[in-house]
Structures are given as C-alpha cells and as structure tokens.
Image (cartoon, rainbow, N blue to C red; front, side):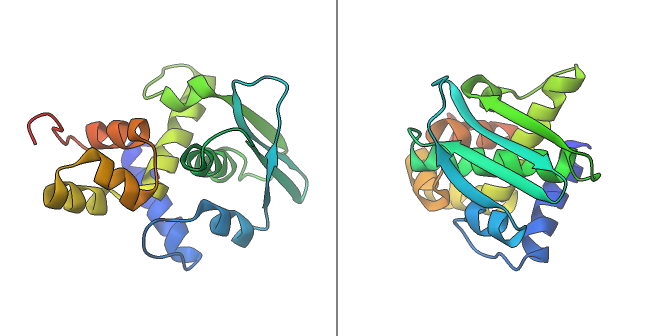
Length: 169
C-alpha cells in the first residue's frame, strides 16, 4: 500500500469502529477487533511488542517496562501488522524490537512491513489534519505530544513526514 492509502485506511478503521477524537486509545480498537492486549516481560529487553494470529485467535503483547506512550505506539503498530499484513486469513506473527519503530523507508519485503506498520500507527494515533492544525496553533512539540499522547520521537517523525518544518516554526 502507498503511504496515502495507509493514511486513508487508518482513518477508515477508526470510523468503522466508532472511535473518534483524540487521543486515540489503541487498546479500545484492539478490543473491538476481539484482541486482548497484555503486558509481557520479554527475555530480550529490546523487544517492544508482538502480535501472533493463529486461526481465529490473536495475541498482542507489549513490553511491560515501556512507557505508556511507547506502549500506545507499539499497540497501534502491531494492529497495523494485523490489519495490513495478516488480514488475509493466514496465520502469522510479527515480533518487533525497538529498532523497528524508527524505520521510515525500506526496499526489502520484511522491512517494508515495518515501515507500513509504523505509517499505520502514526496515522492512527496522529491524524494528519489534526497534527497540522495543532502545530499551527501551538508550534510546540511537547504540547502536541501531550495532546496526542505520543513520544517526542514519534511526533517528530510524524511532523517531518507531513512536511512540517519544526525548526522554521
């Protein structure tokens, strides 16, 4: 899918499940999709989350040690994998480490899934029009992070991807 298609798909997913306003709660979306989100302590501390689909059952785990904002992005990212990559009815899983959340471009098939899941998560949690509206109103990264309940790195990447010049304000 193109970046634009992912943006539209994320917005449609929220609309289809009656989720409106900000901040978006990705746990509510997961629950509406029949998925329980659980905290986990992974043996590898760099792991942020995972989603596994086996038949009609889907498991979504997030790192218990991560901040709430990181968990929110991880849940949205894992839902991106489910809705974009596991939606065909096939079983599968994605296990994501911290490094996966900083992927913004890729040319190989595995990494492209990470880029798409990141784009979906960003679009789900940080609606493009609302980010631009609030940026124009406040011109403050920390304020936007509070409004959307995301990390500074997530919001910084989102603003950059939307062509917002943070330094030029």
